[in-house]
Image (cartoon, rainbow, N blue to C red; front, side, top):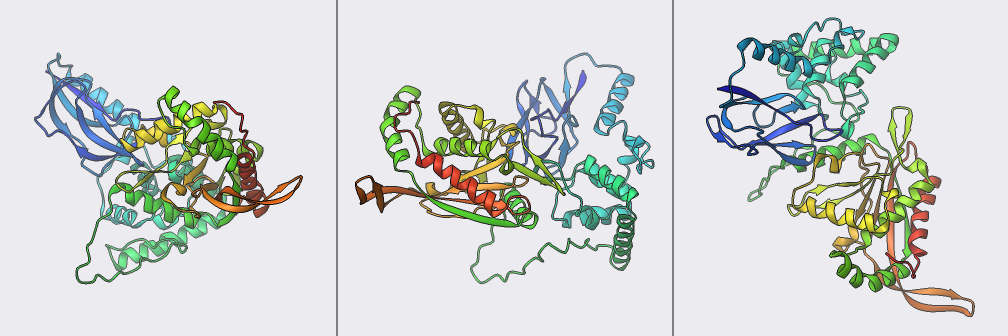
Length: 464
């Protein structure tokens, strides 16, 4: 008999951790090769973790809700293969632990108290338990490694909440904490503020050992909601909680400003009506308005690259790639945003195939983690629900999001060489929310008008 260590596999280029959502096998169960052992979630995408070997599940190291790092051992499976020596298993176990903690962490200024991985994974003390409880009250997610570094360095969660995050969905990474520590060492003002926060936190804990660290002053206090007779209480599922936290964080992060235009898309509508049957017969799928609009957005982003940006403190990150996320409603009422990578490099046919593929896999819950990563701009089609106008919330860490409403026929003045006429035209509202820290009204308004221009001037003779 031999013991196989089942680890969390790499799940995407930018995915470093996942949350255990459901164990599919119990200890003692026989597992066939490629059988799914558990379900995990990365941000919004659910995935199964299969077993690469046949055997019996002997041990599980995590419970539902625990966060696991990529490469970390999740479970032990006993197989019929020849057992390795105990000494080699011990060496491998230590090596796996060391892989979870960067080997150079003890060489980082300000972290000399961390001597080994075992020091990071120490037994909880009463003070740490209070710190961990405080983490639950924070409005941001922190990985176990970030929490460990913060605890070792005496960084309260009130102070940690002020650290700018560069990770997915604005999360604070190890590098963000180390950068903050180096800046604090060089800035006396930050040191004084850190001491003040630490003293306040210590005093608060002495008064009440179950105290919760104070939220940042910018965060709104929870509203107490009274329950009436007959009211039904529905607990948010994991995805809805993620959406709620992400939206609240975005509003607190970016000062939203809005622009809107009304586009005459008569040529666009007439062209699609002419080609859609032939396209369906040739490609086996529909051509919707979504890829046509995404193409116009990608062209406008090339014209105005300062829309395709993110904000990092007082730095502006201008994105090289144009990766457009498209908000997609799921059958359960939740929302997900799969991303079309390098949309400006795709033909209209390529964009259409990508849109249909991502939308279908989103509805079937078959998206991969990478499918929702790396977006630089988001598009949402609220017209699909009969809405004519909307102001969406920015999808952090992006700087803008564009929405289109339903297309409606309206009487309009048509200018001709022979004079003005009244005719029936197809109109659509285009709205955009953008981050006023980096996008002013002139830039935002000009960009959205350019999108409208591309749609209004659609070539009726175009082939696809």
